[in-house]
Amino acid sequence: MDVDFDPGRFRVVFMGTPPISVPFLEALVQSKFDVTGVVSRPDRPAGRGFHIAPSPVSLFSRDHHIPLLTPLSLKNPDDWKEIRNWSPDVIVVVAYGKILPKGLLELPRFGCVNVHASLLPKLRGASPIQWAILKGFQTTGLTLMKMDEGMDTGPILAKLPVPVDARETTPTLTRKMMEAGPPFLVKQLSEYLSGNLLPSPQEGRESVAPLIRKEDGKIDFTLSAVEVDRHVRAMTPWPGAFCDSPAGVVKILSGSVCESGLPENGTPGRVWKDSKHRMLVSCGEGFYCVNEILKPGKRVMSSEEFLRGHRTFPGAILNSPGNHLPKNI
Image (cartoon, rainbow, N blue to C red; front, top):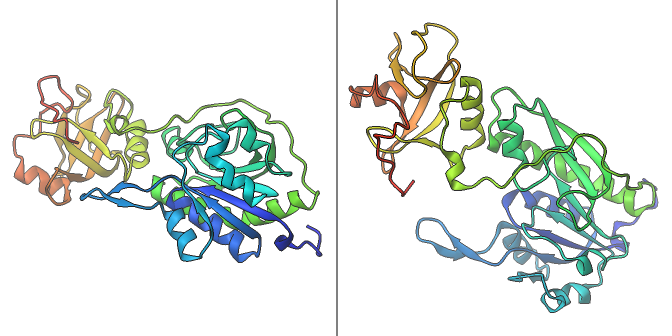
C-alpha cells in the first residue's frame, strides 16, 4: 500500500446487517475512511416478546451518528436514491442480506466489494460458515471480491485462509471471522483503492452454501456419527440440532463421536446407555455420544441426568414415525 494513501479521500457506503458485520464497519471508521452512509435491513421483531428492534449495524450507525438507510427493497432506483446522493467511491458489503441491482452495482467509481465468509468459489451463498463445518472443511476463509450480478460470482481481490478446528462450532468460527476479517478488509481495500490490487476471475471448483432454515436443524441419524457430530456443531446455536423422541422434541446441544465401549450397531436413531450412564445414539455408521440435551421449557441437562429422569429412553428410536414431533420447535 502507498505510504501516502489517505483513506479519508474515499467516500465509503457500508451495507450490512448481523453482528458479524459490525467489526468490519467499525474498522473502516477507525481507519479514517469517509463512511458517508450505512445501509441495513429494516427493524424487525426480535426476542421472546417480538419487540421491534434495529439490526446490530443500525445500532452502530446510530451510536456513531452515521447517516442510516433501511429500505424495504432495492428493486427500484427510488429505493436507493439516498445512496446516490451520498456519492460513494466504493460500496462495501458484509452480510447485508439482499441482492444488489445492476444500477447500484455500477454507481460507485470503484464498484461494490463484498467480504464473503469462504474461499470462493467454494461455498457461494448465504450460509458459508455453517456449511464449512457441515462439509468437514479443515480450512475455510474470507474473500474480498468485486461484486457482479451473480451470487458470489464476481472477480477476486484477495483471500484470507482461516483454519477450522476439529471441535469448531458456528459461533467459534464466526468469532474467528470477526477477529481476522476487519484488518484484512482495511488492508486489501486500501490496496485496491490505491490501484495496487486488480480483480481476477474466480478459479477452481465451485460449491454452494444454501441458506440454513429452521427445519434444517433436524438430525438425520442415518448419516455417519461423524456427520451427525458436524451437524450438531454447525446448527449451534440456531436453528439448533433437534430430533423427535417419545418424550417429545429434544435439542442436542453438544456431543461427540463415541470411540470405545460400543454396543453392537443398531437401527439408526436407537438410544443406548453406556457403562458411564451416557446417552449413545446409533447412526448409519458408528455412534454419537450426547453430552448436553434440552427439552423446550426445561433447563439444559447432561445426558446422564436426562436419562435418570427418562428411564425408558434407552431402546427408543429417535425420529421414529411413531413419535410425535410438535410444530413448535
